[in-house]
Length: 165
Image (tube, rainbow, N blue to C red; front, side, top):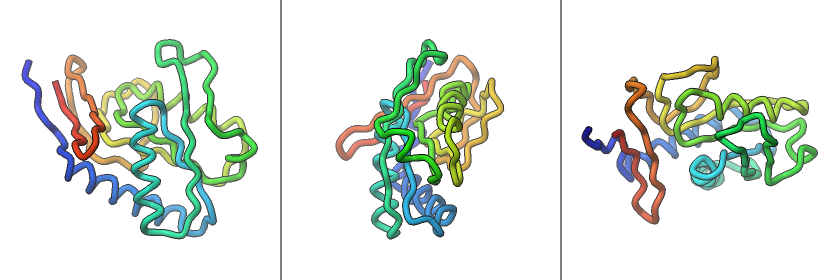
């Protein structure tokens, strides 16, 4: 099987900026929002979105890292900020790749334990292979792939890329 680059560094930068503008349009009335990234790559992607959002708007952006055991999604999900901080706020839950939807679904479930103003999701790559009825509000790219193919996102200093193998 061959490896193909599906997004290069400049394309990912463009996707980040576009998603930041979409988030700004959605949350323009808010004073502050939470950008919650699923560890590890989802959080890196969330940091990049938050930086882009801060450069184009006056919305206060609170970053939150979401930690979960992806092999046992029923185990405890932890966030780097307390529920009291994100309660009654707008939240964007971020991950790098949406495969089956299970990680994003359990992440959404965790945040819905408290009242929220608005809740949206963002991914860089949506694989269109969902087992769960999860909808992505902001996405960089949609790919129709086979279940045997694998998508990886690599975030390196000045060299971000996404590959399909």
